[in-house]
Length: 41
Image 1 (cartoon, rainbow, N blue to C red):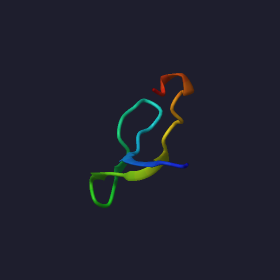
Image 2: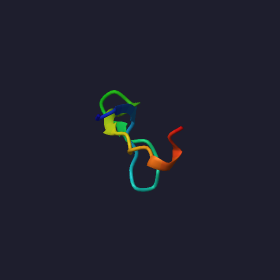
Image 3: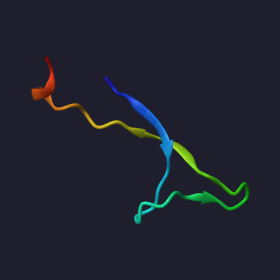
Image 4: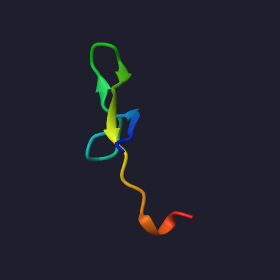
């Protein structure tokens, strides 16, 4: 199962990427990391 999370895109320094035209943070989708198998109950 692939889960995607909607989040603000950040650069290498951890600061949000600002869209120069709209002056708002860029939002995108990223793959959510898989949950470790040992934490299942």
